[in-house]
Length: 186
Image 1: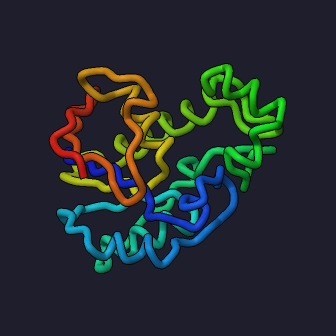
Image 2: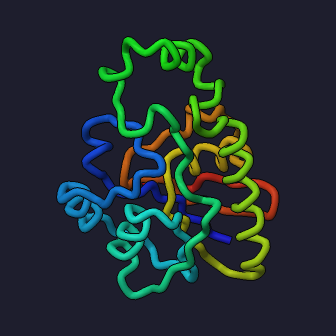
């Protein structure tokens, strides 16, 4: 199965380097323009996070395809950090603890990294299993979703943060039922 992982297009919060998790923010005009320049192969099935920014991205990139939304692929809950950026959080003791942990502590009043990573991987597994013999699928999701799935399944193995991709970019992979081979970077 060919799988495309595409991070949603740019939002105003992305430009301002804000933690935008549960805020259902739309794409900004720069994000829309960037996506309109992309040429991607068609896919049999399109799967999106239910967040506005992912749905808008899918509609721009795959205008003649329907899409399925997968609730468990929604962005993580950044809790008290939601909507803020590094400068606004720089004197926050909880933020400093989170940074010092290498991002392993739970977000205060939000999700724990191991919980959202497990959620993304499980939903990915459930979706590809349910698609059975599909030849191709595109996942239009969040950066953390892509990073979690590739950390778990990509060969050769790389750590979570090594799979970071910019907005409107991602990876083309081959799925053999247990591993993802990266064939192209988008």
